[in-house]
Image 1 (cartoon, rainbow over the protein chains, first blue to last red):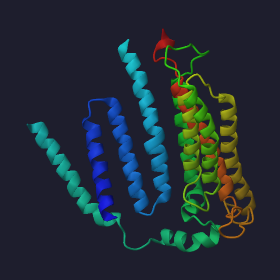
Image 2 (image 1 turned 135 degrees about the vertical axis):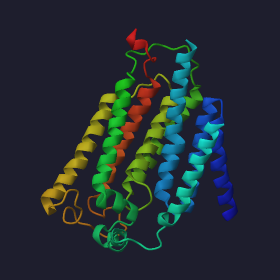
Image 3 (image 1 turned 90 degrees about the vertical axis):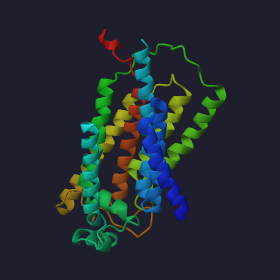
Image 4 (image 1 turned 30 degrees about the horizontal axis):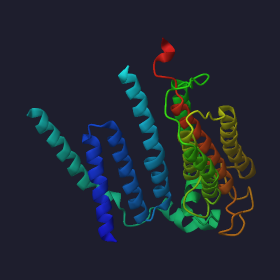
Length: 80
Length: 235
């Protein structure tokens, strides 16, 4: 179990750093969503299911989509 | 070179601060307020989920503020991104019939699941915010499958306003009945522990929060999906 926790911690850190250095905005947004998903697992392991649900639904789900929509809108603007 | 050195020093300073503050972050014993929540929370609110008792009852006023912050940000987004008046058919690929039908079939169960989460907020993990986000994700599925679909903004804002109003009214009912805003004991019968109709006004408030958050996030998604092309309104 602790092994899985360590892997998820590592996943969160690597995705966070990768999201910062990624050149492509869409992959940066998706990687930020991966950070949220990993962190929500860690919240669950730390016996905070309420926080885990919020993080999974809003962090990994809705905010990722909202950022993706924003990226698409701004790209449309840049092309013109 | 100097710039990198300063950056490195700043990182080291923050790291030293973190190490110095580490013992403060994990207190080994409960403070007086925390002790009261843990020991008296079940007696005073009779909610099976102590987190909900704290969020909605002991710190209900803070939650009202949080809901207001969400409302302000959504109305700000709605103000900046106006929805296109009358749909201009965009040259975009339509989703297949399969995807559209499946999204409509899945919509109802996902909304039901969100409602389940906030109705059982005082019994199981989760509550108004989580349930509302799940409902908004169901709406998102519908919007992604069918780009031309427009949500009834009037209907959603009526739900949103009435649930926000209901939250404040519940607070004032507590004020009238017991003399403190958002009071729980002495307003509605607390009922039996771990039953659906228990914990006094907590489930009432969480249902209102769930409806409010769900309709707000759905409106935000709809506004963003159908926003006017940036800058076009000014030409």
